[in-house]
Image (cartoon, rainbow, N blue to C red; front, side, top):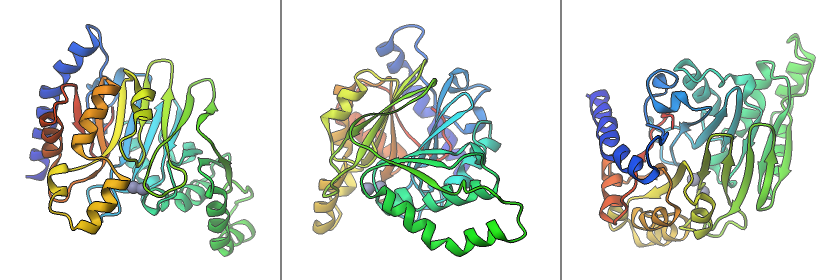
Length: 326
Ligand SMILES: [Zn+2]
Ligand SMILES: [Zn+2]
């Protein structure tokens, strides 16, 4: 029952959204269709693109078994660029690999861009440092993030000190120190560049966090902006400016009304409602707007899309689920 409802939604979303996106982008547009990762490289448009965006986890601190901790993989051919490290990130990469995104091997997980240091976005950091090391990753983990990232990484190393010594000096044939995090505490602007991608960090407003970032990835075929956690911020719209994929956090404006006042204060300061996102997306003009890190409070994927449409947004919008590829 669950599967058929989900499939229905995917088809409904494609039917609703793709024509609008083609109109906006003109003929020949290569708007990524959502879909189970199993369709990547087979039937979905994302399968034909050099750059794919894979939702490894779309969750929040809520213990929803269908939505793992927030983590997204931008995959450019064999190269993997992770954004955030939520619970289960290494196993979610394996699930995406099994379903068709071949680049997502454990040992390819050697870079992560943290949006901020909230626990839901970083609980997978020890996993990302240690598990691929045990599986013989050839390099340490590059970690890009705000001030405080180096402290977090060194505390993780200290917490697992005995495990690391046991593996290095016990019977395991483990001789590298590639559990290490090479930390880059970044400021807004260009933070990374190689032959495949240019990555810019954008300062966003996530309540009282002194630093939180959105990221913009530019590759040879696509421009992708990921909001991280933030209140509506014009800098994200400017960074997108007609980008291919705008992946944005969101909460249900409708269900917000029944939240307790103390939680309403928190959500309004830290996050973005469907109504606010509709206005932001109209300025950003992405080929497709993908919702992630959704706070549903009993609403459904369809409800969030309807709220955004009701708020006046005309472009393609889809509510992401774990292992969707765009
Ligand atoms: Zn979060
Ligand atoms: Zn947060």
